[in-house]
Amino acid sequence: MINNDSTKLNGNPAKSQDGTVRRNIGRVTQIIGPVVDVSFEGENARLPRILDALQVTRANGQNVILECQQHLGEDRVRTIAMDSTEGLSRGMEVMDLGTSITMPTGEGIKGRLFNVVGEAIDGIVQPSSEHGLPIHRSAPVSKIFLLLRKYYIPELKLLI
Image 1 (cartoon, rainbow, N blue to C red):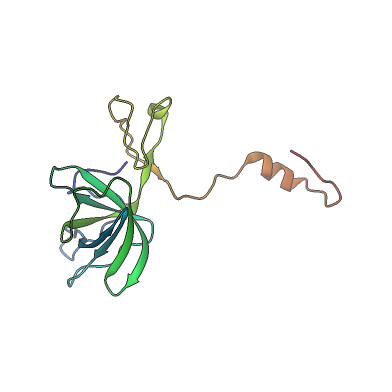
Image 2 (tube, rainbow, N blue to C red; image 1 turned 90 degrees about the vertical axis):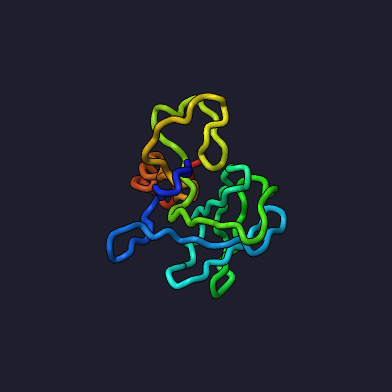
């Protein structure tokens, strides 16, 4: 569920001293299959965090989401594209979204189909979910595990 409105970033984007949102913009430096290297140069540029989402727009207006996988040093990161890299070229502008890829949550998603970036692919309107959960979050704690841990007896072995 990446916000396609480039003026409204997810997460906590950097703000300048006057309170305006400062977008972190980079440029594509290399494309090898689904792997895209991006350079963030300039005085206000900063490297995105590992697992943060980046967005690049193809010439036809379609957005491609990249996920930061590795800091290559200095001002470059290596990313993985969540869609085909066809139509991307060196020098294209890449925007750091400031958060990881999130999936929509709530009652509106039951019985729906989504792609890896949280967009509905079943032909029904995208559900309105202001708060999603990141795809790289910790696993939820099982209530059964907590109950067994509370009454754990070292000599007893349980097969579940």
